[in-house]
Image (tube, rainbow, N blue to C red; front, side, top):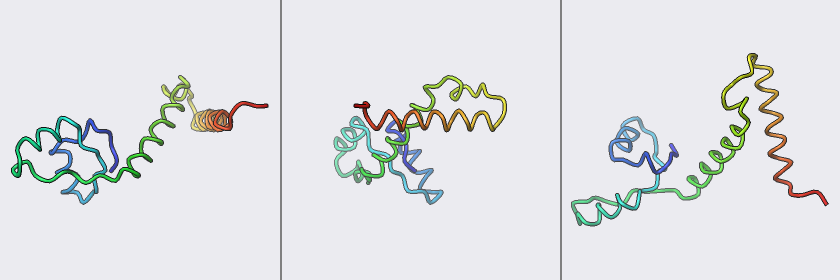
Length: 103
């Protein structure tokens, strides 16, 4: 499970481990410092797949761009069809803007 650094506590990691879920959460700087201060009693550094975490960040930024449309963020659309149409329209706009300026 790839989550934000805010969820990097020992308790969250232990919960994921018990459920058999691999955590892809980088260690916060202050947590790393505290672990190092404790020496060998501080335990090992947490494993972290930087590439997978980068992918999580990309998806999170895309969702933020989608939610920039108030109708999609608040689900003002009453029917699933109109919500899906708004989602597809917003996705098209994001894609077209990613192509760069027209010459």
